[in-house]
Length: 463
Image (cartoon, rainbow, N blue to C red; front, top):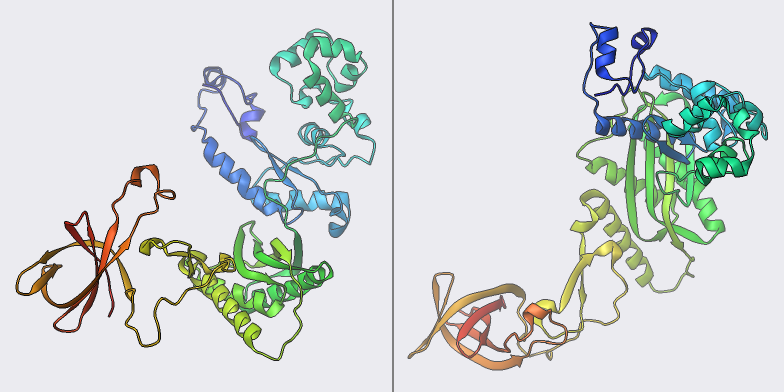
């Protein structure tokens, strides 16, 4: 068992991560330890990464205790590179964390400086001079390679960099040489952000945190207006939007809504988020207030403004889409369904229930199967086939759900064959069905079918 982390007091007593627990107890008999919890550490690191999204969307994890932020083009929003780094460290310190940070041209150089030269901000192109005095361990190499460099008398990165590349490659491999080139600023490995970058985004920062719900919704509408301008310039509309609320104490909350058609109307976007916030089982808790609210367009599609027509069909369709979006925001997209016809004559497969927001335009339409004065050929309510008993005699009797119905009229058969070319292997060879329409003495009408000429099933009722 080895130490994975130590506090300041333990470090002052000579303890360090990687030390055997037995050795540590020999040095400090009163040592207090607790079991390491890597999943909890990972969750905490991800929580801090969520908060860092308020500075830049390019945030990557550097386990076990590091984060890599690409702040290119964002430092001017915080007063410059040094001011941004100081603010980030100060805000995390207020949240109870001990922070070591640095800013450099490459991720590996920044990581090395953060661990061995805290608070450093390296000018553009000066990475090699900044990391040269650092120990070889700053490259993040394995302990065997670090020990080999020390035995050879190479203690700093600068000393290693002056050796021949062919010599280093032959002894330590191409990976070590590439890490050296990256730390010196000669090569670069772009970081992979932990979250997909949105197509468009707009944000609003507050000098004083806000807590009122109406202020939050007004901010969302303001941000939607900013997004609308960018979307309109490119002829696009948003299909999925996400509002991100950054709380002053470091907590982050994300709320997402989707639309059935591309939109860039701020009033509609604000209404959808209002419905979503009102329906949350876990309401958004402002705590001490939100100091940053961001609106992101996660998915966009082409959106062309249609010319106005004399009819109101398009207006009605737009109102229906808006109603579907509101219902989906309040109850969930999987609870607002649309029935679409399918090209089959099997009754239970003649339609498909799909989320209304994702329903594609129908390639075929519902077909009328009867004339104006003809009785319905298909039941109003389709059931899962239920076994029934049909007893013949002077009067045909139907026994369904422990109730006997005396059949007065019966019409059929209508044969429906199973589609063996579409059926799964385990359902191939299913028997054909002979359907009948029956009516009892009280006027109730049933839809029955018979398999193998023996077994009867009730598949639907007409009223």
